[in-house]
Length: 494
Image 1 (cartoon, one colour):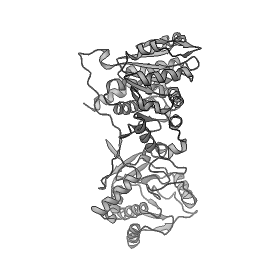
Image 2: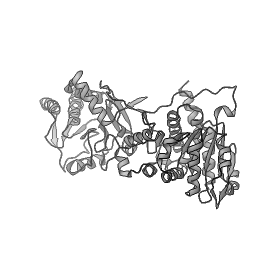
Image 3: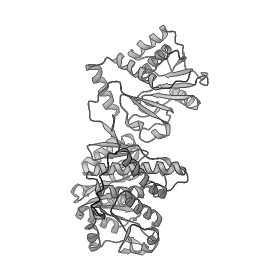
Image 4: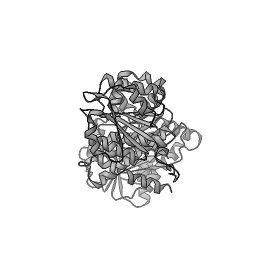
């Protein structure tokens, strides 16, 4: 799997490399050279430079383009330089590479390629003043756009920022950073590559998740071998029969031996026509919401390897009783999603510390805010740190949803890049819960099972979008694409 380094880890690793192995001037040269060799240049080239070491990479690129006979111009925000940047800028002057100071009159339409060397991964806050004006003008250009290391204006750890340079290609230096994947990254980066220049991480990295081989299915096996799973959800108010059926379908297509859809008895007639392979397990209810019945829950829990709880189940004290019972008594893997997460916030997350089962939580940012007590703004400011800390404290596996998904058990962190805009539709989370209920039944590690489910779900969404469009696709389209995605995983790992 590809390594991903936090900005601080990258900074420390860079400093260690400079102190022990490679001088800073040499590293800057390697960065500029690597970018030059990676890009298919369309002349003339405009290289927009700020005042730090990221600008220094741009000066090296200019020198290398000059060697190759490719016309380029340096566009400086101001004549201020880092020490290493000044070294290479002076070489550009010696080589008569043209440069100019960026003004309101600077014409970017003359360039076929623009290079963004304004800010590096150390950038925090928001772009203001001249830098904001330059980025806005840069973004309006029709030129092919290349960002060096990270898109200027983007936070390297979070993928957030108000005014961010767009790129057709982002050339990460050393290692990918979380900001290349999280939050706004997919909206501003069309394509990205990482360029290894010899910086070795000194702290543990995060990982870009890629699925390994799936467990082999034996001929001498049966449905029990691969797990009975239960999906507990639904209510009269949120019956969502087709969505619940899609969730059950997702569990079956993701490899569950048997998927049991446990819903309020009063809405069962609406569910039955929409399910085929899955089985129905009616639960006692009152006014269309499940009520606590220990005998029913005990019988159900004793039959299944995993339970996914909370999808459209509603909010009531009975829901909380059911969840509390499962946390304290169930012996398998319990996935808590949707309304189940709200119920958990009411019960208090300390209940997780003494859980009898393995807990997997699947919140989006608002739901994570409810269970963690953190404001959404604080979560967005350090999503990996908060997810990792929560998972470690409460001894659970946490899947934090977003354009790219964070999966962590408090020690290891995976970023799952798969997913698309078309998945911003009702029922996408239900499909994920169905997939996860299945993978958690036959993958030994809850962390691996969760990351695999996120990968399958996101990849299926991408496939569904390619066959429909991001506006019209539904969660059912994603569920239908699961089998093709799993087929691709099996083919790739043969």
